[in-house]
Amino acid sequence: MNERCFQLLPNRRRRRGFAAIMAISLVILVGGALATLATYFALDASRTRSEAAEAQLRQLLNAGAIAAIEHADAAGQTKLQLPAELGHATVSIQVRGSGDAREAVVDAHLNERALSQSLKMHRVGNKWTVISASLDDDAQPPAATQPSERSTAASQRS
Picture 1 (cartoon, rainbow, N blue to C red):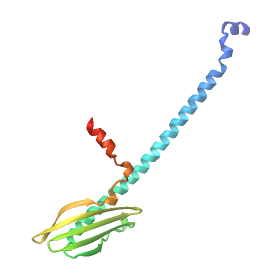
Picture 2 (picture 1 turned 180 degrees about the vertical axis):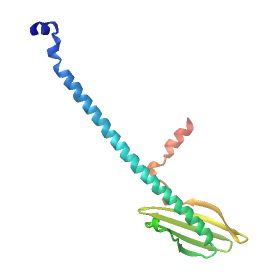
Picture 3 (picture 1 turned 60 degrees about the vertical axis):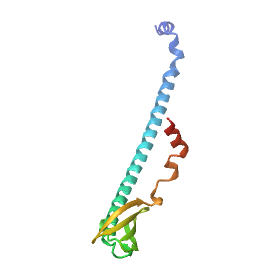
Picture 4 (picture 1 turned 180 degrees about the horizontal axis):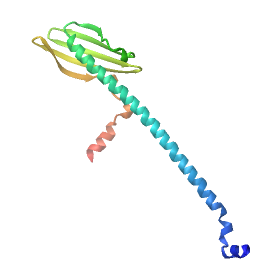
């Protein structure tokens, strides 16, 4: 009876390896997808940590700007006292100028990261007012992440 079954299904013997090849191909495909997902999640976690550090640096710059307004009467270098929880962070303020116009440079450092901003202040009565604030050039993203002039011009033509 076995011979009769094989005679009725002649392709049965020739296709034995097809299922094995398909199974191996699927295992390779799933393995590649898992490796891609693992890489994606690792990069996403790294980006999240980086964004948290950047947010903390921006908060340190805000604290430094407030302190710069408070210390604008005395030109010179000041180091801001920070809570113990921010043990690895430092904020320094350099106030320059005289009269009713001052410029302050606030430097914030957290671990290996740093941000700096310049503040232009003007005194009205007994109160200092910030006229402009700008991040220093060192804080800008690297050139590789900036759009090129060619790509910007091409997007404007469309």
